[in-house]
Image (cartoon, rainbow, N blue to C red; front, top):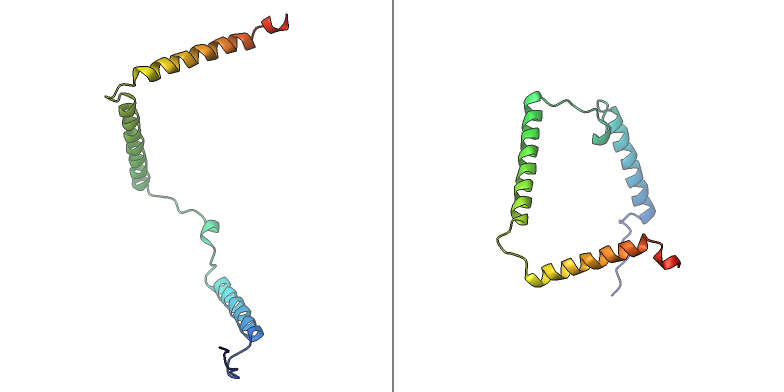
Amino acid sequence: MTTPENPQLPGLEEVLARAIAAGEELAAALDEASGWQPIWKRPRTPKPKAAKKKELEDQRERLQDAGRRRLAAGESRLPRSRQSRIGNAAARRDARALSRLRHSNVWLR
């Protein structure tokens, strides 16, 4: 189905020209409006001492909670399985032996 030609609808070029003109008008209005600046260019407003203290207290509390969680995770009531402990110890021994070989000159003979 084809759309009928409507002579009252503006063409694409006309719509684009209107949009560009409106954008320029908006930019000019914003420049005039009491020195408007984007948020990242505005000077920082200093916080009151109480607000800064509260923020630091909250941050300290968050960090302490995280530390407690980390400690609790390390001291978990569920012990590691014997197999995983043996495997880790064996891997450590192998790595130690390889390291000794790597740092010695035995392989040069």
